[in-house]
Image 1 (cartoon, rainbow, N blue to C red):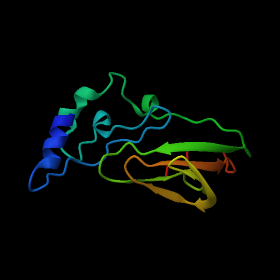
Image 2 (image 1 turned 90 degrees about the vertical axis):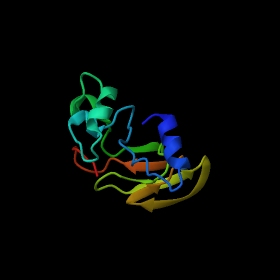
Image 3 (image 1 turned 180 degrees about the vertical axis):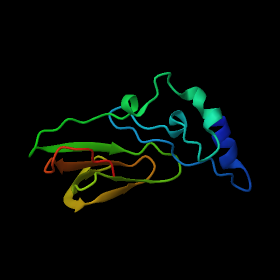
Image 4 (image 1 turned 60 degrees about the horizontal axis):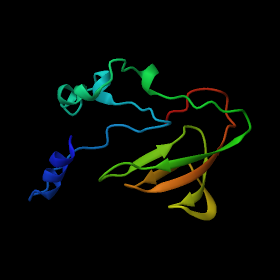
Length: 135
């Protein structure tokens, strides 16, 4: 939906829900359900004009290559407007080390609720067998 349509819905009395987030970006790629034929919200035809000609899971899901035993820092930013998202890496514990640009006392989580515009840095150790860890 374009910005004016979203604003009109938000300013309406009563409030009109503009919909949930449609994708998660990781290294510039993510899954956009309407492009892959998912029409659970009935908007696929309207939204499909925003899809690339080569839309497929292979083109949109970005792999992150890691070395076994190394620890990596991930910077996570929520680009949502109204609702939060939950971020997890299946079978992995994340250590939160930064929130909103401030270094904090580290603590471990299995998943992280991220609200609109929030920023986190987490450490994750590649301590599992190589594989697909979508949560």
